[in-house]
Amino acid sequence: MPSYLSLINWTEHGVQNIKQSPQRLDAAKAAIQAAGGRMIFFYLTMGQYDLVTLTEFPNDDAAARFLLTIGGMGNIRSTTLKAFTEQEFRALIASLP
Image 1 (spheres, rainbow, N blue to C red):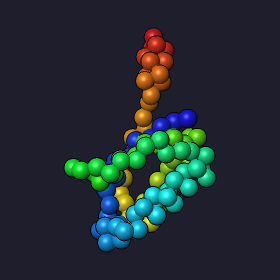
Image 2 (image 1 turned 135 degrees about the horizontal axis):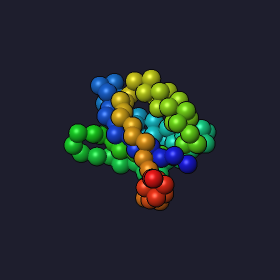
Image 3 (image 1 turned 120 degrees about the vertical axis):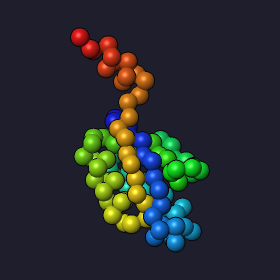
């Protein structure tokens, strides 16, 4: 399954409602599972980003739908990178001409 690394910041609205963030995380995990994916890790971070997640989705469309839906709620902004595992990296390099 494709992997996606998300670098996340709370919006002003998200910070104003910070005490609800654990419930929002639970809802996000449920939505990911409903989309056929899974959250591999979640970290609260210090520095340029507030949160970092690694998720898997069946395809790019499912990932995009989830990210657009959650972003539209107004609590976070994210930068998401499609990620390749070491095994995928090795297979990709081995396939080069």
